[in-house]
Image 1: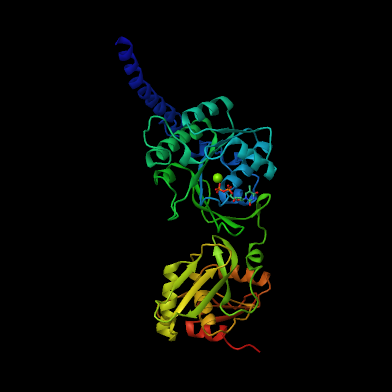
Image 2 (image 1 turned 90 degrees about the vertical axis):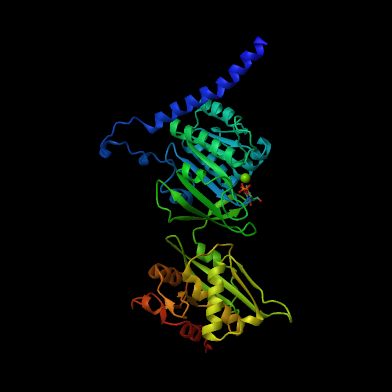
Length: 434
Ligand code: TYD
Ligand code: MG
């Protein structure tokens, strides 16, 4: 009886003490409550650690800040583990000890991958573990510079009864890693899975707790990958990193536009090039449409890949209402090649021209690109960053571009056709060429 009583006391006292310790720990990094002049606050940005991947460093704003907590999200199979193993190996080679915690793969699998990537390093240590208590202890003993947690959905704390991956577990384990990062000046990168809807599985609180959130995007079936920053306490969220998945892991793509256009069909109806802006970078993307009669008695189909469905529907409605295209009896398919997810309104006119081109079976001049936002009245609205977009077109040998009239400056590096309406744009784009 006595023994049982004691056991009970110990069990309740255990978590309570831990709780006290946790808040105590947090006090350390919240720092003392005495205000100091900002001029005297130590700036740790100069101490950034390079990840060894220039594209990633740029997205981060110049490398990893010591003591940061970051989240890398993306679909399964997109390359999160590959990217982070490359980072782990490079940091281990250049800066210091790195701990790779895997809750998803066995150490054997991790090693196979590391060998394939040429990522074997003395200072890269790994553990297959999911108990955050144990991981904390290992970190305290090993004192690594960087910890990779792959993935946050497989980690757990014992006090929380719900299974790994649940909201409570994700929130609690993320809290542990936050303490580790801020308390010990250790950089921690968490891998997060993305649900079908595209959101990070787990609570929003995860995004609030971390210093930066990067999304890894692309089509698993193609090799093109974009790393996008959606939150960054240490830099801008305008930068994107562009990679190709190869047999040797992820390699930066020096010339993304060339890469994206490399498989473009020559002079094929329904295909048009749009100078797209991904953050601050111009990218030339091919938009493809296919318009075919709807089989008798069926409902017309609308299907898109890689573009915003709402804008696509709006563009189709404008084509029908303002230009009289009889699309009610047609199936329309629209693709952005390369596995990108395109959002910009500047893509509207490209979609309209692609659909019109396929419908009338008239190819667009392959050296002519199309740019502009379409309004509901069929007017073409100005877009940002025209100068950079045109420079990229010029660099890749394009000779002409249809742009919004109000964006015309008069000193463009290539010939521009300024248009005010969708009608004018279609006339120029689909004009019979000599
Ligand atoms: P992975 O990094 O495991 O994705 P995630 O962690 O996001 O789920 O990578 C998934 C795919 O990448 C896998 O199907 C194999 C492929 N791959 C390559 O093409 N080249 C490589 O060098 C590696 C390591 C993986
Ligand atoms: Mg993985």
